[in-house]
Each structure stands twice: as C-alpha cells, then as structure tokens.
Image 1: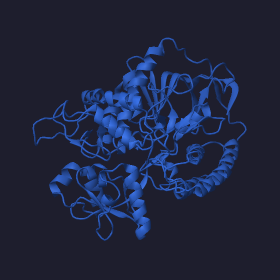
Image 2 (image 1 turned 30 degrees about the vertical axis):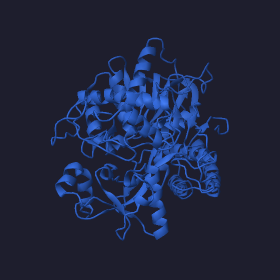
Image 3 (image 1 turned 90 degrees about the vertical axis):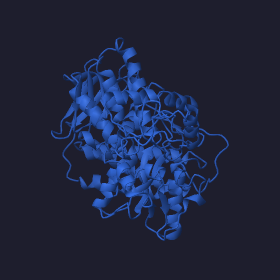
Image 4 (image 1 turned 180 degrees about the vertical axis):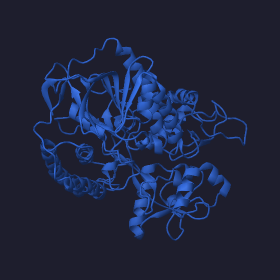
Length: 544
C-alpha cells in the first residue's frame, strides 16, 4: 500500500526482477548502455537456471536444418505454437550459442570423431520431440555452466547492481498512482533481512522471475518458482495466456530424501528406457517414438501405468550402457543417485512425473514487451507463442537468450526518449500490525499445492476443476484479508502470488473444452478442429 508522501528512491535505467539466464543475459546486453539493477529474492544459485540439466536446442549440425527444428517444435506444441515466433526463435539460436561460447561457456566436446557441427566439435544430444541431435550441453549440468559464467560477468560489471535476498512486492504503475496512461515506473521491494520496503524507480522494468510450478505439490522447481512475475504483471493490467498448459516432466527422482531432483531427458536421448516394477517396458505401446515422445505423452503414459498397476513409481533404466559412458555423460545424476544408494550403472532409477515448466505466462511481443508501457517479460514468465500446448525439450533456455537479446535491442532503441519517473510514493505500513498467526500462511500454501495436484494435475475433469475453483476463491479472500491487515513477509508475498496464479490456471483450464497437449480433460478427450490460445484479461472473463 502506498501513501502520498514521497522519499528518495533507488533509481536505475533498467530494473530486472529475476537473476536467471534471461535476466543475466539481458543485464549483460544492456550494461554498456545503461545503469542496470538486478533483483533476486534469494541467493544467486536458487533459481531454475542453475539446476537445468539438459541443454539448449539449436541447429548446429550440417545434417540438421532450421526447418526441421521449426517443424519439431510445432508438432510438440500440438497446434498452438505461433509459427512466426518459432521461426524467429530458431533463426536466432546459433547467434545465441556463439555469444555464450564468447562469454566462456564450455560446452561438451565430441572428441571421438571429426567435427560435423557448424560451430565446432561439440557433442549434441537428442531429447524428446527432436528428430535430430541438436541439443548442445555441458555434460548434465548445462544450467550451472551457463549461470556461473554469466553471473561472474554480471558481478564484475561496474554498471550492474545486484541486490539479493529481496522480493518485489508489486509493480508501480502510473495507473495505480492516478497518473496519465499506464506506464511501469518501478517496483516496491521488500528487503528480507531488515523487513523494510524500499522503492526502486526505473525507466524500464523487466520481469524475469521464472515459472509457477511451485503451485503443485510435486515439482522439479526450486522453492522460488511461485509465479511472482505473472501475478505482478496481472495486477498491473497485463494479459496472460495459456496458463492451463503446465508441463509435467516425466522423470523426477522418486526418493524420500530428494523429491525435486530432475532426471534429465538426455538419458532417454542416449538410450534409457522406462520400465514397470516387474521390468516390462511400456512406452512403445503409447507412441511410435517410445521414450522420446513429447513430454506430455510420456508423463500421461507414466501416470496411466501407475494408476493401472498401483505402483508408486516407474523406473528409468540406462544400466545397459557402459559404465564409463554413463559417468562421462551424466556425472551429476550419477553422483546424486549414488549418494542415495542408487548406482545407475547397475540398477534403474525410480521416477515419477512432477510439475516442471509453465508454458503460459504474460503476453508479450517478439521484443518481450507487455501490455504496460516500459514493462517487459522474458523467459518462463512470458508467453511468446513459442511453446504452444507443450514445450519441446531444451527450447526453454533458448527462449531465454533469444528474447533477452531482442528485449535489450528494443530497450536500447527507446532509452534516450524515456525519462526517469517522477517522485514515487513510499510504502505505507502505518495501518498494519505484526501477525501472530503465521501458521495460516503455511496451511494455505500447503492446501493450494495439494488440491492443485489432485484436481488440476496431469489428468483433469470438469468436476475436479470446479472443486479447485471453489477452494481457491475462498483462500484468495482469506489471503487478501491477511495481506491487508498484517505486516508483509516473503512467505506471505509468495502465497499471495501463488494463489493468484492458481486461480488463473484453473480459469484457463475451465475455458478449454478439449484435450490438447498438456491439458487433458476426461470430459473432453478429443482435440478441437480449431486451435485457439486461452487469453485472460484483468477485469474480463477468459477469451478463447
């Protein structure tokens, strides 16, 4: 809540909310032209980028083609990808890889044969939905390799200020302040350690906060994936699209000591197969590509087999490959599983599907620009039209770089003509008190994630969706009352955002009277003849 008094605010040319691949890339592309502030609500290594295993999809082999990459993406997206955006993204992939190599990212090399790649002797792997080997990677820790290089450069740049352990409370817009137009002016930011809320004024603000898979009980995402950027953009007046398409990664480690560790799709690309507890392989019965079918198909197949047989998990088996090969290609997965008593060279890995990626998000154009002036969204927070109803493997990191590049170019072209916002009101907490009921936050957080998993999960029904809608309406009212009366905290802000995103997902799912891609409804099992995006607009009902 704001009051009429003003105080000096932190200022910058570009405020980037989120410190993953998209945010760091944009910062580096902007830093020689502008003063940049990056806001991270946790430590540097707690975003999704750091834990990304697979790689980056790009046409780098002379036997591959951009047309093939485009067609594979369109097929995986089940008719909802925007072809112009797919072509735009695929066409800039090589440029992004070359830039990452220039920054110092060391991708895995293939020394066993002469170079057949366009950019060098890199090892390319194959993942679900791809008909060619086109995923460039750094062993099985690509995100870590990329993140560490970009973060080091960001921290060393004199024009970039990095603020950690601080969470954006809300965006400041001219409309909210009663001023003309609807321009984003910056954000209110809660400093976790002190509990103080500061104002950051910016000529441009960029949302790069990642996805919203923490809305589900079982997820491969780190704790911060609460849909913060999507929720803030919605409250600022931005449209969101295709929120019903949340991708469940087929293979997340099933172990009581580690329920968020992802088992990369690259294992299946190198020959791993899925088996039931009795050793039976089942994927060939579901799709001609078997284990390399698109993720929605593999996840539903696993879910169906678990329900049919009553087993708690299925098993991913790569033990038929040479041990040296496994250890060289998947050192991170090998080490993590071994620490839990699973030797993947000798035994299969217990796996289950888990919420992994948000295919929908804040509606943007190819420059990452939202409906609100001076506000951009890039990476998983955004809806570009690239992923359609189901993201193809390793297109996500590619999207981060491509749209960080284009957003940086667009912001630079408008930098000189955009003035710093006038004095902004400071945060007012004179009417709130300290809470003595924080247990309410933990209880509501847990309830949302459980009913979203049960009612809005891999397989849905209209009845389940209405149950979820009823529950989220009650909880959002309860959360709003809590937010209005008590001093804010990071858990409360995350819960507020999580509840809003859950509501948007449910409303989107109820608006789709078909089964397509990641949205599978037993009441409408067939795919409609015409494919439409589900677009929600603040203050209006869903528009199909």
